[in-house]
Image 1 (cartoon, rainbow, N blue to C red):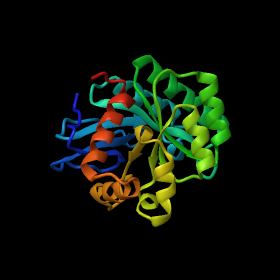
Image 2 (image 1 turned 45 degrees about the vertical axis):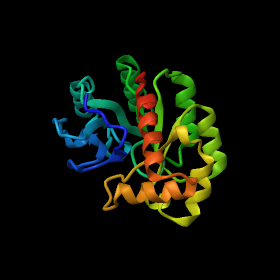
Image 3 (image 1 turned 90 degrees about the vertical axis):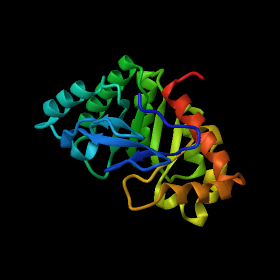
Length: 227
């Protein structure tokens, strides 16, 4: 399995990644694009059916793609998958396809990467209903501390939305989230993950190297890897 080293910057969620020295990236494969994982230095993959690109006509094709890639050793997580009330099909269809992906993740013992917009009740109900043992990560988080507290109480990991992470007002949230549940991401934007690390490290009052070690340990725990 392609894995990070303790000194790497880890970009937990990105799109269109290429190999770069000192940076480990989790590239998100979108089922509707049908792109398969290929061996690249410093890159692992997550694969999922995103609610934006889900409809009843394509459901079977998207599900078949997931079945064909989910077991691949370079695919370390399922997702991004989730719920979106602003863009996507009916919540019923989103729920059915999310449940299928969650069951796939549980069967394979792989964590999930979650997309959720204005549908937290639906998402939390799914988590309660499915009772997963694998870890789940909320990507692109920029909510209030109250929501963060609720999610943390359920055991989720939180990855801060890249643009918000770079703003001064994100410091309070970054300090609020326990360091051992925190991740950072670029989400495929033209943003340097190293800049996000430097900002977050300053917010936390630690060195960038210390934060890299924390993220490395978080990555291992997220995947359920024992030292």
